[in-house]
Image 1 (cartoon, rainbow, N blue to C red):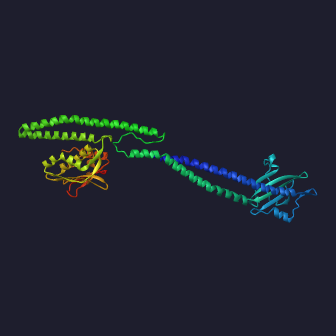
Image 2 (cartoon, rainbow, N blue to C red):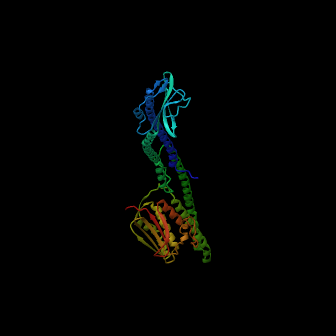
Image 3 (tube, helix red, strand yellow):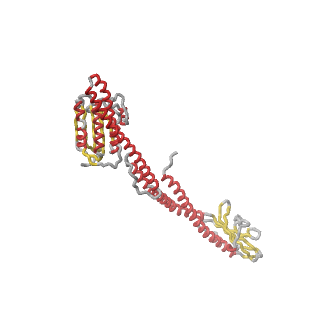
Length: 455
């Protein structure tokens, strides 16, 4: 299974802890508010027991509560709740009031500061009530005064506390989540910069990464830079080997080709026919070595000099090398040039264009036509080489750019490196190469799209 996003992992660890703290804070604040409100209502209920206890009288040795109907109405009147009272004697008998009021649970712990008062929850006719109990002695006769009320005011207060605290807590939670989200996003922004730095590079750009990152990520950048340095050394050694090998092979191959040509000129015609195969093979080998050297030059680092290049001048310089071959085969090598400027390495772009022209001259028939063009439009600069040859089948249009690929029916003197060099140089310059059919000439059309610059 893939590893989830670092942002998701951070949020998954931070948000639950933050929400737990918010809930704990809300619960604590609610408990404190509820406890303070409960104490206030309990004191009011206890005042009722004190008022009843002050009215108790001992008549004929029995406690009695001489209250007028008006006094009872005032005592039991409340705007929200119903009030109940009861007075019980030493043995729990009801001396006055509602007999349904429950007594305190036996064995309930008492403290000296309680002064004989007790608060507890109970039920009266299956309705929850809050009860205050006061134990007094009336002429050495113990009595218990009970005052109870329904829970309407208390429940309303609980709802008000919840509603009063819920909105600020939700707002705080939203703000906290937003702060965490944007904080994590800001903290991970250096990683996005590192990703953009690496994503914007070509495969040949192995310079050290220079991005400001936090101290915790700096070891990763250091390791990436060391890896890039090792890759640079490896690729440089590979390029040097190919270049050196190609240079070393060119001299003996050129000597071999010259000797074969001299022998062909001296020997009789029948011997010359037999030696012609050797001369052609030596020529192909020389061309292969030249292509390998070009391929080695096409894979340098981006530290090489890049200048502003006018494409018409580049085409003229490259065409001078191929005009003799075109004239020898009777091919009309024409040009359609428009102003265009690009940034790059002139030597490599000449190599790119030379391979395209060479490819077109090889596949154009005797007396055929090859047209080279350049220009600039809204999407960038372009180079085009088209011919009136047999074209490139659609199934082969991607394969022909692979190294040493030989299409079915291709020319025997090809080595499969020319178009690979073209793509390599194009990629190094941020360009693309596309092959299609030429609508005018009927053969192949190769188009290179490059980033253009203003002259």
